[in-house]
Amino acid sequence: MERRILDNCRKLISPQDTVYLLGDLASSRDGLNLLRSVKGTKKIVWGNHDTMPLPLYLDYFPNAPFRMWYKVKNVILSHAPIHPQELEYQGTLPQMIPPRYNIHGHVHDFSIDDDRYFNASVDVNNWGPVKLKDILSHWNTSP
Image (cartoon, rainbow, N blue to C red; front, side, top):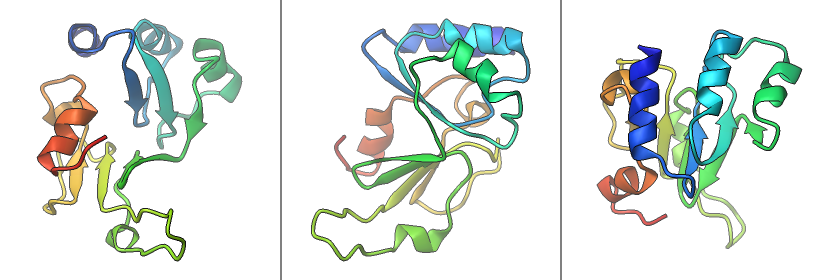
């Protein structure tokens, strides 16, 4: 399974791409080593199964920022789906763009029946990554 995911990543991801890894990265050093070979600039979201010691992750991804979530335009990228009310929040400052959509992993093949959510788990995406521009075009949103 790991090999299939890695092969799909190699086909789709170029060195110029930004790769958002939405948690549950690997369960072993071998898995982290395989993941390190994926091209692109990695941005990592912590998952509930990312339980190895932090220095180990930093050894494999020394330049990658680790966060609980990322915001790209009006989209939140997270490990687990966020609460629907967080997609309705209206910021008080003009520069605050309220999130309208959520790209997440965590739920494997149990997708949420709500158009504001996109399940990026490999389980439902042919065991590979999905381009952010393809997800955003589904929502008619530009990156």
